[in-house]
Image (cartoon, rainbow, N blue to C red):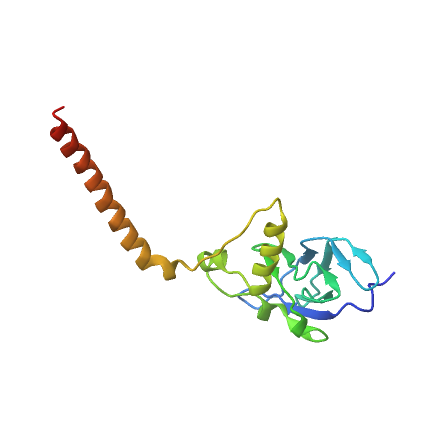
Length: 181
């Protein structure tokens, strides 16, 4: 049985080569992070692994439902991708509704950043998916703040707290002396 026709899809392509230009041998595994429900026809879509083997040129093609389709719940959701070859990574992508019925190159969907930056990189769709997951789980609330906005306040409050602690310590000593202890 095919997926419901109401689902919007995007075709993902890509080519992996090494530094010399030789095609990489291996495969990619695509898995949605959650069970999906197609809401118009009430299909439950299980998050099974879809393995795409790289061809002789190191290329692949796959068609996947977009992650923010209004006919799917929850939305947005995220795909986990495992690169099954030497030096491969575990990565995540979102396919927003804006890429429906298009072909996208995987290289354009992934951030090309160093590992420190990549560890803190979150797309808007990934952030929304995290909010949905953690806000619904056992009443946990996720709050994200931009630390730069509060840096000046943190310095001011830490200075004030230090001054208050010093005054409290001084007040206690003075009080004890005043009482005659």
